[in-house]
Amino acid sequence: MNTDNVLIVGAGLAGLFLALKLAPRRVTVLSQAPLGEASSSAWAQGGLAAALSPEDDPKLHAQDTIAAGAGLVDPEIAALIAREGPARVMDLIALGVPFDRTPDGKLAQSLEAAHSKPRVVRVAGDLAGKAIMDALIAAARAAPHIEIVENMRARVLLQDANGRVRGVWCDGDHSFIADETVIATGGSGGLYAVTTNPPEAMGQGFAMAARAGALIADPEFVQFHPTAIDIGRDPAPLATEALRGEGAHLINGEGQTFIAELAPRDVVARAIHVERASGRGAFLDATKAVGAHFPEAFPTVFAACMSANLDPRVQPIPVAPAAHYHMGGVVTDVWGRTTLAGLWAVGECASTGAHGANRLASNSLLEAVVFANRIADALRDDGAAALASPGPAAPPPILSDAPRAELRQLMQAHAGVVRDAAGLSLALDRIDALCDAHGIANALLAARLIVTAALARKESRGAHFRSDYLDAAEKKHRSFVTSAAAAP
Image (cartoon, rainbow, N blue to C red):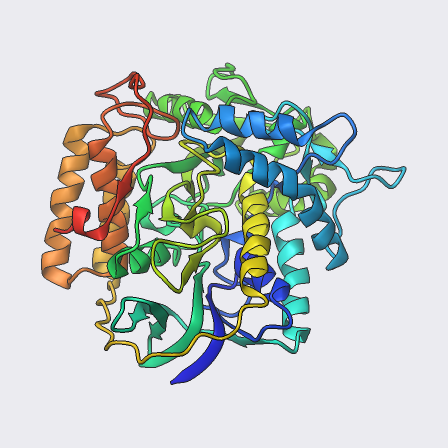
C-alpha cells in the first residue's frame, strides 16, 4: 500500500499537465501503459484552439463553442476556457512544445469546423498531440515532485467510512492511498468497434466514479469523427480535420460532393454514414489541395495511408465515422471538483459543461489544460488532510476478449452515429446479459450508462441522433444520472 499526497489516475495531457502545475506539492501519476502509449492525447492531430491573434477574441471563441454545442454548453464555462486558453498555450510553449510558426515568427493558426476564425495551433501539420505529450513526458520525468508508476491500471475507487475518496485499488492488488484523487483517464471510444481512440479507453474513469456514487452527466453524447481512414485498422487512423481546412473536400464513390466541408462534425459524420450505407462510399480528396506536399504537410496521415498502399497525393482517402470523443462524464464544478469528497476529474472523463451535445473542434486539449491548471490552483497549497482508513475494495471483474468484442460490435451497431429505440433496447438487453454472465465490469457499466441515457433522450440533438425522433425537443436539458439509475 502506497500513501501519497495527490494521486492522479491517468497520464495523458490532462494528468501530466496537472502534475507539473502542482509543484511543489508531491504527486503520484498512475499510467495504465508506458508513458505516451494508449493515450488519446498523443494521437490528437488537429491541435489546440485558442484566440491568440489580434483578429480573434475569446468572446468569439466562446460564441463558437456555444453554437457548436447544440444548446447544452454552459456559457460561463465556454467563456472561462476561451479566456484562459491563450495563457495555457504559452505554458505549453514554455515547456518546449514547438507549435508551427509563420515566416515572420508568429504562431500559425488553422481553421477547423465550426470555428469563425483560424485559431488552432498545430505542430508539423498533424503532430500536435505527439509533440505536446513528448514535451510533457520529458518535463514530468525530470520533475522531483512527481512519481510516475507505469503499467498500473486502476479498477475501483477506495472510500473511507464517510464516503470520501481516498485513492484507488489497481490490478495486482496494489492500493494507492491519497489525500486527493484526480481521475484523468480519458474517454470511451474503445467501447466501439470503429474508433480513433486506444482500445483500452473504455470509459473506466467515469464508470469507477459512478460506481462510487458520483454524478454523471450527458453520457449519451459521443462524438464521431467523420474522417477516420477506412483501411481496416483498430484503432482507425485519423485524417485530421485540418485537411479540410486546407481545402480537401469530401466526395462519394461517384465523385460527387455531398456535404459542406466545414459543417459541424455531427452533420458531416451523418452525411458520410448515409453515403456509406447507400453503397456509394465516402472519400476525402486532398489531391489538389495538398497534393505533392502531403508528406511534409501531414506526415501522420501520409504514413497511415502509405502503410495501406494508398497514396493520398494522387488518390482520395476512404473515410468512415469513428468514435472519437465523449462529451459526457463525471460532473465537476469550475475547479474540477466532483460530487464526491476527495475526488476530482479532468480531461475527457470529466463533464464540465464546456462541450454540450457536440464538442467544437480542438476544444478538448484546451479544456484539459485549462481545468488541469484550475485544479492545480485549488490543490497546490492545501495542507494534507488527515487520512482515514478506506473501506475494503470490491473490485469489478475484468472483461475478457470475447465479451469485449461483442460489446464493441453492439455499441457500434446500436449506439453509434444513428440510433433508434429498437436498437438501443436490443443493446441494453445484451449488455444486461453480459453483466449476468461476466459480472458488471467497468466497461459494461460505462456502456450501460451511455445506452440508458441515449434511450431516455427522445430527440435528436448534436452528436445524439435518433432516427425515430428526428427533431430537437423544445425544452433543452442535460442528462444527469448515477450508476443506480443504470443498474441492470
